[in-house]
Length: 208
Image (cartoon, rainbow, N blue to C red):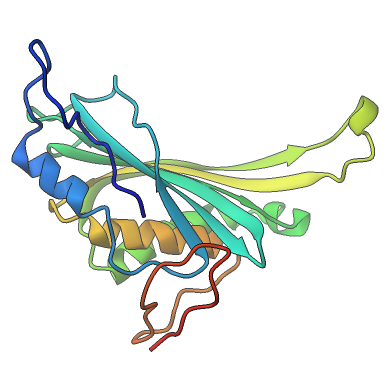
């Protein structure tokens, strides 16, 4: 995983002061030592108007070089907090995954998808507060010269919550599990860990 440019490394006259230490520690924890082999992480630009300080990572879930899900996780930090945050930090997550039409038609899909997030946070011991979000089913049909394209159905989950600690590694792991669940890939069993992250062109890593 490449480094995450959360704030400028070279300061010049007129630049904003360095980010607070709490934010820097939180950003450092976005770089997990272990990443599932199906997931590719990368740094992405963070929105600049939602909070004084922000950072973001993106991810894709692959199986046999086929992209099954994509997502992004944004860290917002405001030393003064904001209304509804219940703290100085706020995490904003987005996940989109392809799904079979019969699954997206299930009326229980919304509650089940939301439980993937909350249960993943609990599994990784990631304390949180003031969680909220939406689950959307999207259907795309082609017309005109795209009339022959197959109908595509997708699940989109947008959520935000306030972490109760500066160490965000558990929240990152929970978000990764959420993407895998949305892609139809079950979580790793307890005690099974990926030794190192891989790229799609790397050989399958060993597991312990």
